[in-house]
Image (cartoon, rainbow, N blue to C red):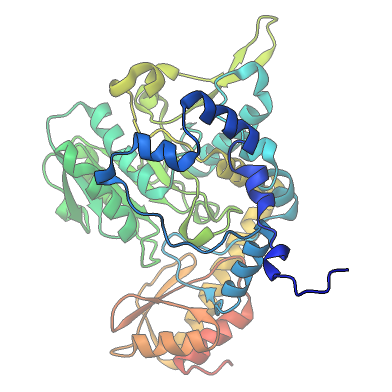
Length: 446
């Protein structure tokens, strides 16, 4: 045993992560440097990076092991105060069934796989995506759904460019319902600017101009109201445009489908079908349309075919629309799908079945209805006469104070402005959420 004090540096263990994950081994480095003619990596950098742009070494601490880093992150996260979200606006709490979490989300066979362009070895993934497409088609009432897009905003922007292709019209005007979520409107407007598309915000059929190539409507609206969009849809059709509709997949379980309400294209996010909020993403955006728009559809499309023996087989269909073939003439150059999350959403629908989805949707609606009844009894104004799971509540001058009171009780509300709050319920909430919200408003549970 050594008698002299030993430095604690001998106990450092930060090489395991580097050895496992970060590049070549020392012997490999030595062999490559010998061929290059440099004694070490510093000399190699000095030979290749001009001194004028070469920054000095960063003042970084010593590396840590993977376990130590995770422990440090847990310590940092433990200082957060985690609240339950009632904010809504396209992001909802959801319960991921453990069987889906274990066997899909955490399974590298699902989360590392690339685009299934080789169908003979991808039948399982293609079948899962076909299931997702079928779920979207059933919910929207439109027969053709792609294999997902990045998110709701991207899907809405793709619907805009799809409508422009499909109508072949000369009008540069695309209408956007003011009841779309603000982040969705922002993406559409950003995408429209370099394409020379004029985005016009509208709030009703009277705002629809004589000509346009399409419009984006919302059902339900961002304030939670279920306004009948058919008059606006008819006006857009009369102006020569296609109607795209942003829809909530859980609301569609109970309400009329977008197709019934006049939509030619339906878009939205499948997040609340078992995909965690994840600090805002990633989530699977959906897009569905009518058969006559198939050649204008963006994104990947799984279809049923026959193999050489005449047996049913799945493959990616209509690939001539995609950028690996059409390049800059593709229907979309933002063709990345959220396949893992689309598969999760499809499996969520399978896990619960039609009756289970209906129970989840009805419960979210009941929570909002009970909350609204309590507000009404206490004289608190609920602005929307109709709703699925979201209420817009008016408290003149007191919105921020009520939101702070709700936060003290463990719940985040949406502060719309100084006078209005948004409250959105989902499958993770129960009666205690309603009571906490009432309490924040000063309403006594009856």
